[in-house]
Length: 254
Picture 1 (cartoon, rainbow, N blue to C red):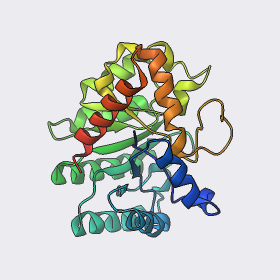
Picture 2 (cartoon, one colour; picture 1 turned 135 degrees about the vertical axis):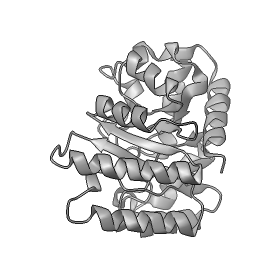
Picture 3 (cartoon, helix red, strand yellow; picture 1 turned 120 degrees about the vertical axis):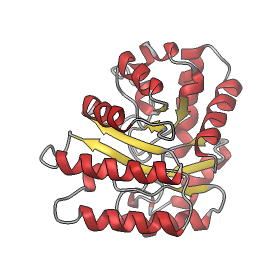
Picture 4 (cartoon, rainbow, N blue to C red; picture 1 turned 90 degrees about the vertical axis):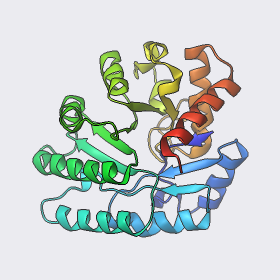
């Protein structure tokens, strides 16, 4: 299995990071993709990647919640500097978040579009954060649509129409703990989306799947997400693992 979205460098794991990684490896997770947030955590993220070469893969980008009026342009300059220095599997996590702060909407869109352009230029995928902002995110994607633009709708929690729209635009759905929630709703229609458009993720330490909901999430729990997909798609665990792993490898091509 591949955890396509995990914040293992988060301070939530400072006391037992090695054990957390080992538990995931023991559960059959072979690779981990680390989304960037801002300059405050780049160092931690890149250090973790260096500690586990070929296993941990750092992305690069500026999270929409860290697009601040006083610093976003400098933050983007740093992102560009990193992208020009070395290769990354994706630009992410980037996008629009209207849950925490709607006042920065206009600069969030500018930062999103700029980073999208860099991903297209480098021919690498993007990993989208779209909280309370599906319509706004689709509007940007439609405007910037082109063959090289592809990626993952991280932590997908929309409806069937939004799922189909994302797939039509060339994006995969990142499915995590929400699929196991009784009120998550995506389990009711996900079978209508071909498994070839699905990748697994945890978003650790957030959004732990049932039966760990409300507790710290970790990458070992990606198997619980895959287990839920066994029920939804009516395929055995090995098949879910194989297809979602192939999807991630094909997308990141890293």
